[in-house]
Image (cartoon, rainbow, N blue to C red):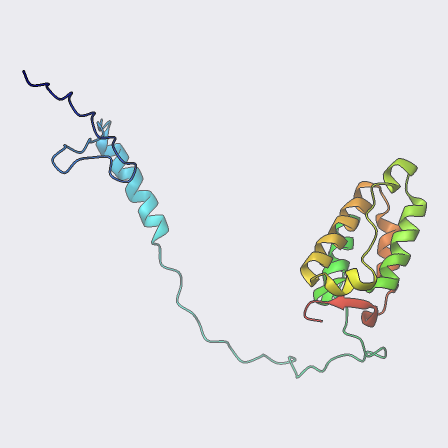
Length: 184
């Protein structure tokens, strides 16, 4: 008598090859409802997406009274600050001031002064959550992006603790050369 071999276990289907070559591929069941209405809606969407814009018109010459302009005088030699947006909140103004002229953060000494001032004016429980600024070798080893993110967390903390006006006054008083900028 010969011993019969047990049947081979079925091959597991691979994730990347879920079907054998001769298996039928499943197809979804499609039910079409009110096709004319659906087609009309599709045409409307299509027409709106592919609407032509008006052709570009060449710039006209300035009219009478539109003479050449010249920049205003700036005695400080620093770039002009754009006017504040009307109705902007203090939080938005603080964020704009921190990002103006591609700023990253104040330089270490000025950042320390701002940190100490805000910490002294904050509620005791909240002051403990304020991370110290970078200094020394930590400043040198930290990338500009990481500095900007850390300074952004200080701005967020300032907003959450209602110290926006104090911080805004301090930052606006800093000369541009006391800021660290991207690429420095």
